[in-house]
Length: 321
Ligand code: NAP
Ligand code: GDP
Image 1 (spheres, rainbow, N blue to C red):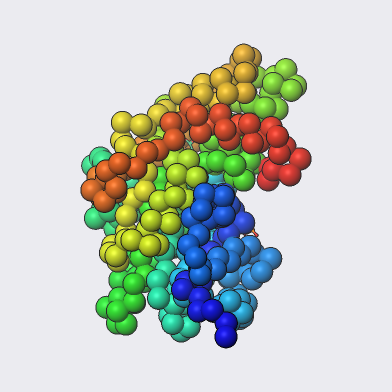
Image 2: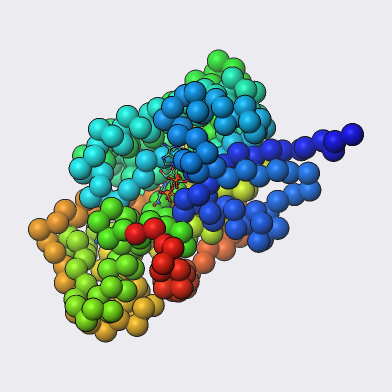
């Protein structure tokens, strides 16, 4: 007789930055418990914009639990060009995944929001209760509205069916397997690639904007560890912010210095103020997380940037860029 599977976890977006980090925690850090099965999906397994493909992949794996990461994702400058596509793709992906999970009796879904969906005009720090308090920043309003609807939908599934579908809110994530595109990537990965290239070619690094905006960065492996905790232990429908403390927030200029140090770059750094700064800050509170996990240790930012730079250099040929 086949042994009973305790938990069959389907990770959508399993081939991306956060998905790869969870895979590492599951397989390399003994995150997987006995009897569990973990399936990591990429868009090659199913295009989740398409409901037929979504149902087919859920039929194939019959998950009991879902970590839903798949999304159209990009840095500030891609958002500014493609707000409509970010809105439409993400609305469809999220509805397809959540509704199919419901139809197939999935016990728990953990979906991924982002701190860039918070209101633009707000007081700081922002916390979990403030998501819907006003319009998001104009630069990424498409993505933000699609993501906000996950929270609305989770509460509706709970009200109507008692389902335990919840969401996490990470701040800016970075790490190995990120998209290091200089044009479309997020800030740290783009700056790592720009700095590596500038060093090779003996040219200056061009940072977009003034360098003054501030960001709270979370290392993907720390996030992966926290997501496993959410999957196993977190019982609320209300979302939870997963990030470092407010005091760990740094300016883009400081982050650039850390990248330069990690890559041993001593050339010129230019700030292109013709490019948008985007949101000046979106400082998020991790008080709720700290109430649950007062002792969780985050990897120091400089150390995590160094590890990411080393990974990028060692994997330059296969890295997304
Ligand atoms: P990523 O590296 O770009 O990965 C995106 C993942 O989604 C990939 O596995 C990709 O598959 C999959 N995907 C995209 N479109 C798909 C589609 N139509 N059908 C099926 N799969 C699709 O992004 P990430 O940074 O890991 O993001 C993961 C989650 O974290 C997202 O929900 C994102 O909104 C959230 N988040 C990210 C950040 C950040 O700074 N990166 C911050 C806050 C929240 P392929 O690789 O096969 O294309
Ligand atoms: P955001 O945090 O959602 O705004 O997304 P990003 O990760 O794209 O970070 C954008 C911030 O980094 C803005 O303040 C940009 O001006 C700044 N920045 C500086 N250089 C770059 C770059 O090369 N790429 C990106 N994406 N942002 C950059």
